[in-house]
Length: 343
Image 1 (cartoon, rainbow, N blue to C red):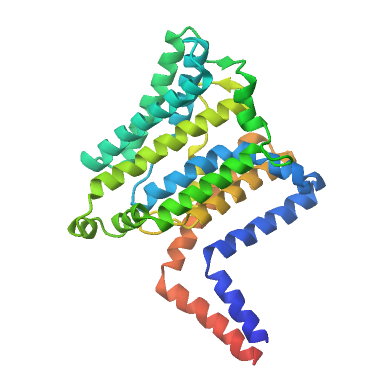
Image 2: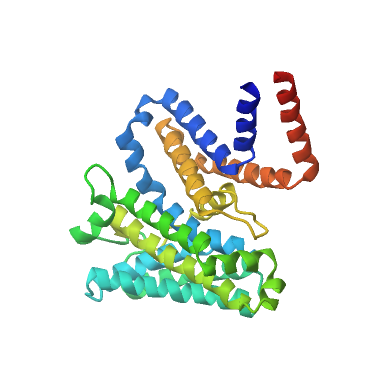
């Protein structure tokens, strides 16, 4: 009986998602003991509004990192799409939903630029997306100045229907942010794990030359993942504008670390070829609840990135150890020893 239990524990330990759920459980216990209000279901549900933007982009960045790339320009695209939405609505007098569609189109163009630079010009992904992040941030500031809007104050006073996108409840008692997140998780999971496109993404990340020899257009597949990030980042900018009832160019400026951490902590190999949408989603919740719990514990906001950075380092170190055959043999030997002693 005990040996079976140890076998179950061993399987759970070697599944990364099991570790994430354990980490989530520990967070709930610790922050709940520090502040009992943290355990209120309504507060936890509404806290999703604060990290939904991270989750929306992290799901698409998972595709990018599986191909062996990286995108650090998503934060700048959030601000740009937010500015485009606000300016087209307030200054140009466009319908708010048409303005949102235009902002998503801008995100597609941004993703296409990144994809072209990386997949076709073969510029290193880190360099290309770092440069484009400065470009997108600069364009957002220029648009604000040309439209006569203060970059500090931004644009506010959006229609009530737009604010309900994040502030409303399509299902009573469940914030729209929860529904949006679940729908995106399901769609992303189907695309990555159940479609031919998803298999092509994995094959490109495992071995790009093999993908090419198999007849796949590896460059197009790689570029398309950056377009996905552009779409999700622009959508995230719209969601953030709805949530905060404001449009500003600096939205998303501090999201890059959390986005990358959510993907890597979720089990996606930074070297490519391995990843999970479900893992990314759970890791996003872990990071979101951690920041919410720290705020509930009255930790200053400027310090909440410290544990996020620690999580990123731990995730990368754990991934390196799990890939170390000697380490894995030692861990299995320990569990085998316990199993023998329990008989």
